[in-house]
Amino acid sequence: MRIAVLGLGEAGSAIGADLVAAGADVRGYDPKPITVDGVRHRGSEAEAVADADLVLSLNSSHDAMTALENALDGLRPGTLWADLNTASPGLKVSLAERVAGRDVDVVDVALMSPVPGKGLRTPMLVSGPRARTYRDLLVPLGAEVTVQPGPVGEAISRKLLRSVFYKGLAAAVVEALRGAEAAGCADWLRGNISAELAGFDERTVDRLVDGTHTHARRRADEMAAATDQLVELGVPARIAPAARDLLVELRDAPPA
Image (cartoon, rainbow, N blue to C red; front, side, top):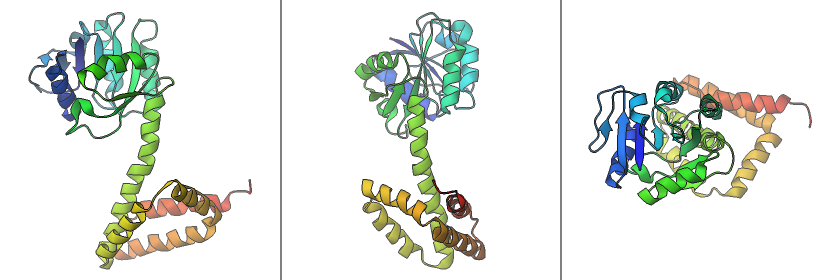
């Protein structure tokens, strides 16, 4: 199978190398002078996709549409374009709309964990009309692909909604520990956070949501005080005031 990899950065290089090792015929392009053993270098996006059955776009959300635009003249009918960038669902839909009428299909692929160390074995969630085709092409080469029923945009939507929680949680932990270090109790807070996270289950989620709505008034005051404390400690406050503002919004909302 002939596969074009557009973008040979950290993720593209790792996946491209694994595809070569699995026996695929891989060609690649990157605007930077990057070479990957076994990946045939092409001078542009259009040259890279000209004889490819499958295109893996691994640029960035900012460059996803540019890569497609630059490749359009080289795309053959029947080519499957897989966008693996962490872009918004709306951008993924725009990519599919851009190739409408060209007999080229776009699938939306969400990489569900960091690529370094996993490469092609990075869990992938894929949606779109030819999601099963993408799965059937890559699974025999060693990829871990799960089909998410629904149109283009459905897969990345799930990843990004998870990111609101997971990356938001990480940011909250970082901000809290910065404050704890300034207050001289970082070890205590680290242990407290670890114990709380270890006990999480679905009931915890229900308690968090229900408690946030029920106790919005008291918690808004609490997060206002927490914001003041961080400022007093000289720690930039971002997550605490954002939580305060959400709680104030819930506090002031008219009864349902």
